[in-house]
Image (cartoon, rainbow, N blue to C red):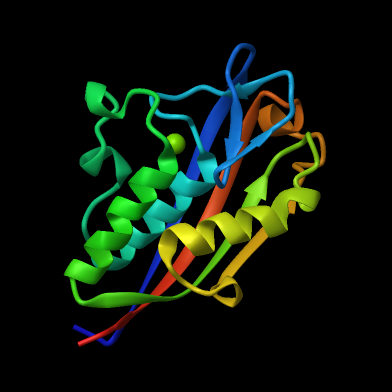
Length: 161
Ligand code: MG
């Protein structure tokens, strides 16, 4: 196998009343939150899928089944840490992560520094290795109507050993 491995991930969650809106481990103030088996952290889930993709180890549903009660209400940062341990086990380390969160409201920009800090702590990598971009969906479709939030991520891994 090559010393470098790349993976991409995508996730989308419905936004509903009575749920928290958690993105990258930050709880955003909003009248709706992401529906999901875990805390519904769309950014963590996209990054997890990108990491698993880079390792050719399937997807988030394979490792953390939505029918498994262990993951009910789970903090996605814990799932992220578990997958980071898997990267180490496979003999790789993260080179960098680039991601985009697509959300009509609330504005994510003022939370990005905090999210980068949280992810850098949980993944034990430097902040300069993590990029998070945010954009709206220009009012189009379900995301544009504020009924959903989506995220995309690309992760590059490098062989450690
Ligand atoms: Mg998800």
